[in-house]
Amino acid sequence: MGELVDAVWEIGGDELGIDAQALDKLERAHGRLRQPAALNAATRMRTHLLNLDRDFAPYAQTDPADPPAPEQEFDPTDAVETSDTPTATVVRAVAWRSVPDRHNVRSAIASVSSQLDDICEQVQRANLPDGEQALTRIERAQLIAILQTAIAILQAPMVERGLLARAGKSLGDAAAKTAEREVQQGLGAMMGIARKELFELLRSIFLG
Image (cartoon, rainbow, N blue to C red; front, side):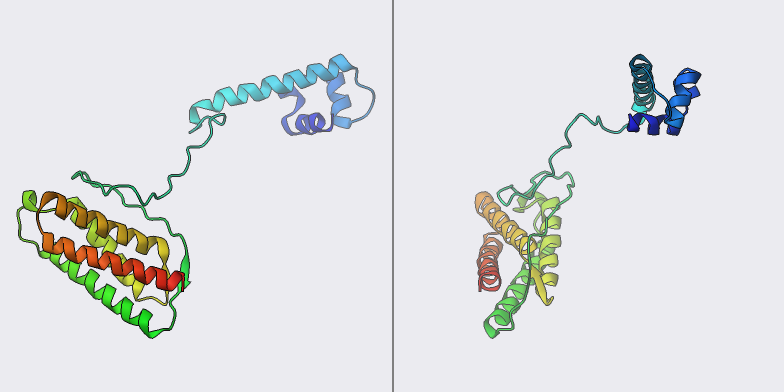
């Protein structure tokens, strides 16, 4: 009954069409209200709310009864997009870790960063026609963006595992395409070595 009284106060009896005597008892919370009158007030309240739902339905973006679509998680087994249609590459951060102040880690970071930079340059400067390259134009742009992001992360005092792992996966996928299409195999070999050293560096940082 308390919720019904509050709702009547909020909306008003005239809007709900409740008779004056019952409205007086509800609004004042005073006097005995017969069960049929209370049920009538509750029914009118329900009808009013249903009408509001109907009126505002065209403006609703989703049906509240429908469960929300599940959030897409990054799957490291997904293949790199092969079409020339631009697509957004979404990489989800997994875990951050401070870079250990150890000589072997610093040396590995310098080596991997240099290799990634060389690969970016080779991909950018390749003078083969598009049809003779291992990667499409969109794939090359995506790979360069991912590798340049990885280089920037490796220069920071903290590194992120998911972003660097995505760079390693991209290198592996690109190297596989050079072997599959039997073109730019020297570049593919560079990518394979860089991928291996990058994952060794990740294990050194995150597993000690």
